[in-house]
Length: 113
Length: 112
Image 1 (spheres, each protein chain N blue to C red):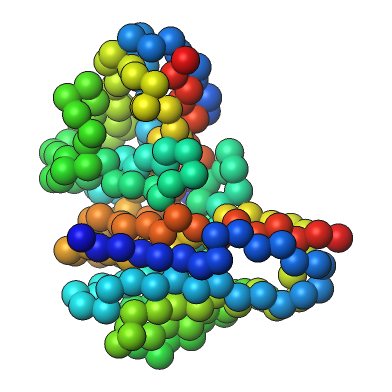
Image 2 (tube, each protein chain N blue to C red):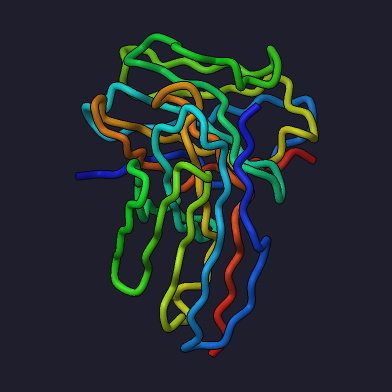
């Protein structure tokens, strides 16, 4: 089966610009997660979707971050306007309900200059 | 606040050496512990998911143990190879199965 796909793999943008990250989960996985790793620190939870509904967005840093999952398939994470501290690797993961294991994408490395 | 601690932060070993890392986590409200292997620009690869106290799991030269009562897990690599070089991450659930809390990882470098 295809894994979790993230696009783009890298993005370099200027402070104040907008960037949209995309995640395609494993087909049939209702649970979709966004995580972020800022340079040298732990991977941290951002939010969790079940199908198209946000179940937990307690990890979203501020209102410059907007996540959507229209139709319960792919998800987008938009950062607007981007700040320098938003730089890091953004991971998406999906999980089949009833299973413990997550499948992660390879991440989007975002650099804000 | 749930903290997951990993040690050491980084490790350099010679090819053929055996090595181990530690993951410490709060023992209360334990659900499961995950070990991942992560190479930069690749997906974190799931190694083990462990749920029961005393669990021992093995995958090739890599094995892991779990002690939920005292809140720690060990990951062992026997006969390290250069291709084992990666960051090894552990994570546990917080308040259910929908939020993983990660440690900062142990970066392993295996030198030929």
